[in-house]
Image 1: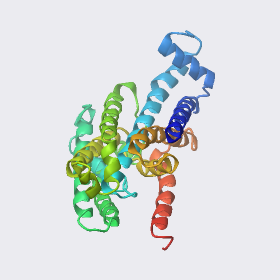
Image 2: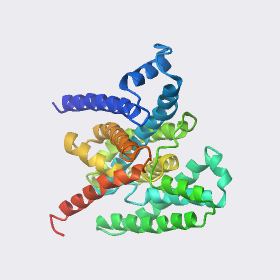
Image 3: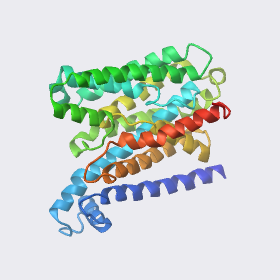
Length: 341
């Protein structure tokens, strides 16, 4: 029964993400219809409906909105599975790349590159490398500080502390920049944006996220055991220490790549795992793939809001994820304390 439930939910989620993907490409100020979107996609993929739509529509859909939608799925899915893995190895339901300061570490090193060596940002692999290094350093700091005591909430406090410090570092670099346009673009990027998505810069984030997801999924059984405690995992023959170290590297890798491509997008790895677990349970063999799809759906709709609410002006996607995640975080923290303030 549970297996059938997982299959049904999986099929339903795939249907929703396909519909959301097409809708994301059809919505905007250009007046593109669903039929136009369908004709363009089918033409590009299968060579049908040649000349059915204007060239300008083709450019809008295929060159701008299609890569943007792909990046939304990669970013949302990557952050969601990163959140699942962090919650598994820390046994803390509040753990998530943004809340624990991992994203802030990546953004601090990236803004440092913009400030000290702006010319390097045009080399495709430089920003992801520095973002990964920053995310890794931040994750290690938070883990060392937050896991020294028995109180699991200490980890969240450590993450928030490190996040505040690293955000201050990022703001310092931004305030020292000379160009107003550079300040605006970096500030927009720090608030989360998919506006820079193009075919020529999708390879690194998409492949990186897929590699990270595959690694985490291969460790799903270990996460199931570790969710019950390190002692239980060790008794089952799992090297919990090594799994934690490798998961920290994988999560830092995913987060760094995502931050380099889309900036700071918060709370996705917090909201989606909780919703998915409430529907299908805590088996990581099921939660990881469903969370990936759910994260993609969530970010597609957040991006639709970011593009349309103040159209033609675009808003930062991180604003909308924070609007959803902030109250959700407060509610969960309140419930975790037994309904006491």
